[in-house]
Image (cartoon, rainbow, N blue to C red; front, side):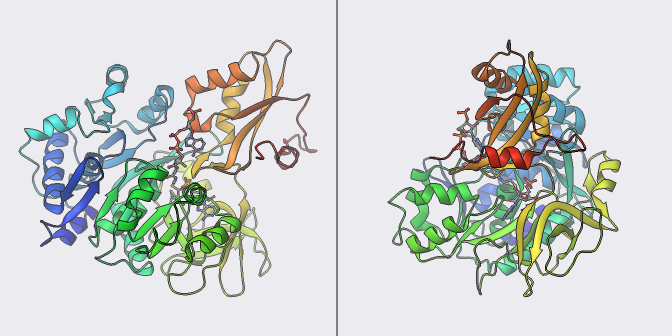
Length: 501
Ligand code: MCA
Ligand code: AMP
């Protein structure tokens, strides 16, 4: 039950058909794809990677990056993708926690990461650039390939995907071959995946949305993938007429709508626009329908579980709701202490199903804290209508989602509080037209503090750019409740219009 074996089996007899194309770079058949996977697997094995070993990957998206992911699955190792925006300080934490055998990074970071790799006892540091070149692909050219696909049990780990924590540092969600296959099979069924589908892929492949949700649907059919290196409106508009399905975060749709070239004609061949990772505003849903005559299908998910609910393929797609639980996923709503709530009331969404991860890597206490009687506590606040439709109405966890990327205020507050002159801080998310929410920091600071620009500059040294506050405002004090807890709701209300156009 190796997920890669399923992907390989799906491609049998289709060796000459196009699997992936990237405008400006080329196109590759299923035969090319899997021959390269085998060679890449051989390189990893020669570097000492054994089944169960972690392979950490921080590279730009490319066809070769996809081959690398599949090669890790093939040899029974554990894929560990990282956002390319992470700084070296952030990377050091992830490597220390996961203890990978091998790190694959961008050639530009090779020198500094090789030093880090030596310090942290890595077996090898290989490189792969956005153009598909690097020491990994050089080694692939001379590789004889690996032996057979490594047999795996459904519970064996396929990937560890790090997700930030409300308390403390990021934690690695452990996803098994069984988790990934179960979710992919369900999505392919409910979204009516077809051999003549063409997936327009513009998401990063270091998060669950782009890596598992989008790619597995296409690879298990198999249907061809138009693999764009990143989301760029011009590039997406160019290839849209050749595609049938697009998956994106709400920012994709906001940006497409802001371009007058995005119209019905260009969408004529499309059968499905899917949105998720962050709330899609009803205004965006409506404007999209008005422009294209099509309704975006919104779904809801999490790194720890892949997809959880979805609006229907056939049937009413309702703006502001995330649809129904997937057929093999159970959901229930509970109070914050686990107590029952009244029918129709707001509660914390808890889930159970074959898609739900096994726990956080080497963190049994945190795993135990996020499960109740076998149900995973998502931390999202939801409401269930009488017909069973779920709406996400808020978050019990202190989390900001900007352009589909999760940002945990605590991590930024800790960095801010460590800066000279800053006594305390509160980081909040406020409405932003492009990103949905943007990060803002309120700081209580001594007169001699460095000032907004210098604070932003020093945070950029330590944190990935998307986490750095777009505004840092000095305030006299932070509002607190009787328990001494900062009342972030009051701050969010007071600063609602910070990024208003
Ligand atoms: C980039 N920047 C951002 C973001 N992305 N700032 C805030 N929020 C962001 N999301 C900053 C950079 O640090 C940089 O700042 C400047 O914007 C330009 O960077 P660039 O890379 O050019 O930005 P972009 O290409 O315009 O990217 C925006 C984007 C991208 C297309 C929305 O962030 C994206 O593809 N997001 C998708 C994330 C995703 O896949 N999420 C799924 C998580 P400076 O100039 O200051 O350096 S998985 C998940 O959530 C679950 C499972 C689910 O339900 O799907
Ligand atoms: P991540 O930890 O990056 O996997 O992000 C998962 C979180 O994204 C969920 O817990 C939700 O808070 C949020 N999310 C995902 N999809 C949606 C959606 N369609 N509507 C609202 N929030 C969403």
